[in-house]
Amino acid sequence: MAQEGEVFDLGYQRYTGPREGRNRARIALFVNGIRTVLGIGRGGRAKIMPALLFLASMAPAAIFVIILVTLSDTVPGAEGAADQFVPGPGDYYSIVGFILIIFSAIMAPELLVPDRRENVLPLYMVRPLTATDYIAARCLAFFAVALALAYAGQAVLQVGHVLIADNPVDYVRDNWLDVPRIMLVGAAIALFATIAPLAVAAFTSRRAYASIIVIGFYLLSVSVVEPLTNEICSSTTTTRSSDGSVVISQEDCSVPTGSWAPYVGLLSMSSVTDNINSMVFNLEEEFASPAQEARDELNDAWPIGVYALFTGLPALILWNRYRRMRL
Amino acid sequence: MPPLLEAKGLTKRYGSTVALDSVNFEVNEGVTGLLGPNGAGKSTAIKLFLGLIPPTAGSAEVLGSATFENPDSRARLGYMPEHECLPTSVTASEFLMYMAQVSGIPPSQARTRAADTLRHVGLDEERYRYIGEYSTGMKQRVKLAQAIVHDPVLVFLDEPTAGLDPDGRQEMLSLVERTARTFGISVVLSTHLMGDVERTADSIIVLESGVVARSGEVAKLTEETETLHVEVADRRDEFADALAARGVRAERRGDLFVIDGAQEDDYDHVRDAAVDAGARLKRLSLERLNLTDIFRGRPE
Image (tube, rainbow over all chains, first blue to last red):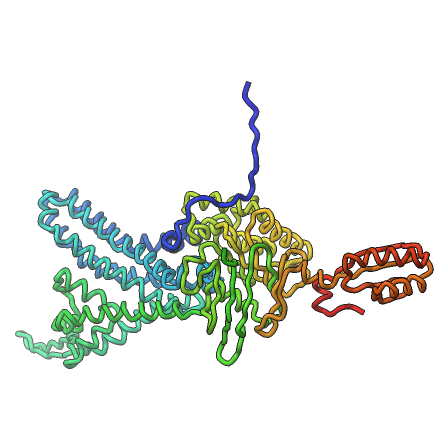
């Protein structure tokens, strides 16, 4: 015969367990930040946007790998051609850079705006945390997600390259230097994609405003800087063919405008991480615009300085905004 | 052992506006009511003790430590703000687990703490609902729960009954009393409602225009207003003379004799005066003014 059990409700109890203080609080903020960005612990709708953006940033890598594998399996001797067609790690970062910015513009405000709009901030600040702890944990959380996003596509791409290689071991030995380069550029892109959108989100009352400002500023900087550094022109030539008929041909051309063009070109948001990428992977862009060509003539310190400015200044503004916030 | 809270020359200015003007007081264990009209400096005082804002002069110490300079000292404090402060898109359970961890409780313990605390505030059944779907009363309970989920030594409750209907108000006050009496968490209850303080507080601090207008234990404050009410069935004039002959000053209000600030031996004088006058004693009772009467001024 089974023994009868009895359930006791002890109710609220005094807590006598461990207290891990400020470090636990920081870790909790960091983990919560990652969960918030990915929509974990929230309703289904909160998960749709991060999932879609994650897929979008992974899609180029997945498509390239599928092409790579399919060609090598079905077309004999196609490995070489496929290898040429599929982008290397540096080219891939050029492709996903904009997608990462879109992801950040949409998801980064999720970390800061609701806390301010719903007045949750005072609940954090009366615990063993400072404003610096709060904003650092939020930045790190978003940086971790952006980093995962940047590396995930590269990982898929690199696995594809290894799988299709005639000798995977040789491939890894010949290209091992790409690993630290991938890590470095991925971190640079993720940091840029973290700080600037969060700095904008620190000043807006609605998430949509922050997203629009970031994407708008990105597109605006590109569309303003490019015409300033390029001169669109066309040349018309008239030739007479051997049969005596006259042939008029028109050709578009594009030239850098003046000696200041390379410096203006640095101000385009798209070029901030592209320049670092080109520098680390030593990319020679086949279809580089005149502005890009002009930038390449500059000393390496310039793109590094611009990158430091575009991440350091927003970071300072962000920190100062929260440090001075009165609750 | 240092007091739970200690204000020493505590001053806070916002530009030319003085919110608190060189205030001194101490708060010890139990429930302390922080009373005062809007703009008296109650919220500023709470923010100073919580370390949300720095003092202009003086110090606001919690357990012997200045919270603005030392964030770690806030680990054993709780705070229930007056305003809306809850995220709407998470469940109460999720939110409390998170708040426990932000207070330094390890994740393995945070789940249990969240469940225990939500049961304590009566939201056990509703804990997996999104906070955005809660009523005002339920949100107030979540606000209280997040303030005590880490088992603080002291919790600040800023207008905890604001926006509640009469039943909700009584339930919230019961919760506050239970939190303090049963679980030993000291409470600073900031309110402009005298009734809330009267029911729950052991001591009060009254702020007016940034200064302490009055402070002390509720029992002592009301003790000062003790009056002895005496009624005799007949021979009232003789009884009045007999009282006067014994040196007892009694105010006569119709059939009632009121003796202010009654002392122990006044009971004997009343008995003896009744015997001397041959009056039949009908009623002998000790009355105290409540806090509302004290602060409104004694009724005629």
